[in-house]
Length: 314
Image 1 (cartoon, rainbow, N blue to C red):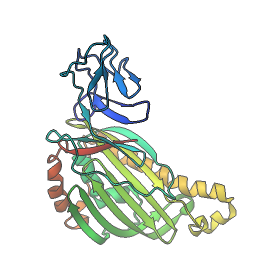
Image 2 (cartoon, one colour):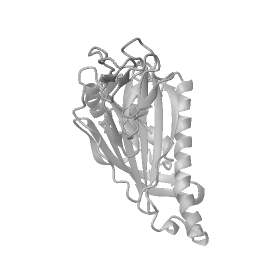
Image 3 (cartoon, rainbow, N blue to C red):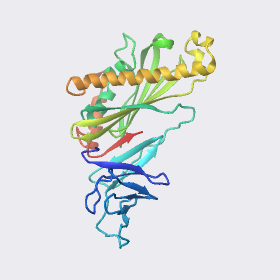
C-alpha cells in the first residue's frame, strides 16, 4: 500500500528497480500473486502479458501484437545510498528535483527498522523538526532545553535545512554528561530527513534518517535508519575502551548508538500512536523554524504531503 494505491516493487534481471501499479491493465490480474520477472519485464500471471519498466506492453502470451492501450502505470524510482526513492505527484510524471547521494566512504552500513503508525508524512516531518522530539531521541542533557541555533531554518526549493547545538547526555560505555553536540538537519520533501549528529569531544559523528511513506490518508509506513562514521580513535570516547581489542572496541562504539536510536524512535512513535496520533514537539524552541517549515511544506500538498513527496524504503 503506497499513497492510497496498491503497487508492486521489483527488479529486472539486470537489477533495474521499478515501482508499478499492482494490477495488469489487460484484465486486472494482480502481479503480486503469481507475477514473474522475465528478463527486463514483469510478466502477468493470467495471460502472460509482459511490461517493461516504463509500463509499455512489449509481449503478449499469444505472440500477437501488443495492444497500445495496455499501458501499465509506473512511478519514477531512484536508487541512492542503498535506498529506493519513489516519487509521487498527480500533476507531474517526472520529478523536477532529486535527492543527492551522500558520501559513504568511511561510514558503516545503514541499520534500519520500520513501523506502521497513524498520521501523515507532514506529521512525521513536523515532529522530527522539533527540538523536544530530538531531546527525547538523543538524550539531551538537563538544562539544555534551549539549543544554540547555528543556522536558522531555511527552505530552498524542495530542501529544508537547520543547524543547532546543545549539550547531550551520553549513556552506556560512553557515559558522559554535558557533551557538546552539533545537529544538522536536512529534509528533501516530506519523505526524507537526514540528521547528522557530531560530538567533536568524543570523535563521534552519526547520521539518523527518517522516511515516512503514506499508505493511505491517515496511515504511514515509517522507516528509520542510522549510520556511524568509522571511529579513528575509539579510546577518545572513554579511557575504559583502551583495555579492549580494537575490533571489539570499534564494534561497541559503532553498535551502541544504533541500538539506542532504534529503541528511542520506537518508543516515541509508539507513544504517539497510543495517544491517537503523533504528539507535536516543541518547535518554538527553534525560533521561527515552525513557520519556515509550514510555508515550505505547502509545495508538497499542505498538511498531508500526499501530492508530491519522495518516500524511501531500504
